[in-house]
Image 1 (cartoon, rainbow, N blue to C red):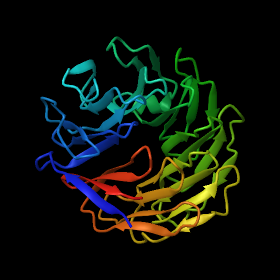
Image 2: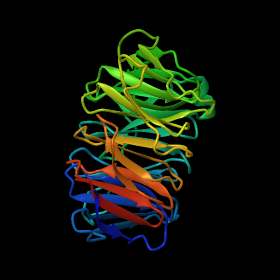
Image 3: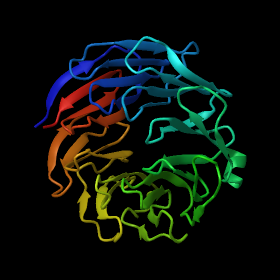
Image 4: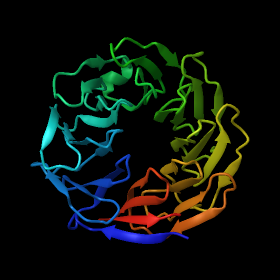
Length: 351
């Protein structure tokens, strides 16, 4: 069973809005609702090694390490900051637009670029991460969705050559991340798309939809889905999250039916596993451990967090009665898990 290693409470009463583990497993970065970002030692709990506070005291919306663990990007109120990792050097680059502009930011696999959605107009922009210069690419291919600022999700292809983006009209598009050319492919969606995720091997794309479907597409194949999965249909709208297994064979999907289901991505129904131990609550996240052995699932309210065996469905650990889980992250070696809840961050040793 898991062991509580330590709790970090350096945010002084502010609720945790986002956490991110550095890919090398050494540091954790955490953001809060008062606009502060802390970088601290994930092995000892020592911190804060670096503290940043934006002058507007605006909530940190997103926080993400570059793949090489050298840089950190975080977003708040129309601003994205790129920071030099665990140093006090200050921002390496700063991108500003209108307040409440940025919705999602994502590092490219080569950690040279950032892609983000402008919530105010639905455009997607790609920047050089370390320069702060004008965007290299501005993509406005979502037409109707751009008019209302309703582009909701994006993801890089594993080779960094393409981006896939989805909108609330159900349109899913692939486009060239270097030139902005596109759409190179447009997929028939299932209405109001909640998330999009490119498979680790790069050949498949999964989207979750408010109509309770999960759709799997061939990345450069036909416009109609390869698989449409309806396992979450219960009359309660929405599949909130999908997580690919590291080998790209399976998907774990979490829905408002309070189940997590594991199924073969190219087959669909029936599910190989259905985890029902968290019934009575909407589930908002599911996360596969990097080694593929475990799945963590939970929700943003007081839903117990379950860690369970991805092959057998057996529950390995339960973290009960979290007051408010705002973020969850596996360590790169799959031995620890960090949970942002309430006003603190807790690290458990899973194995």
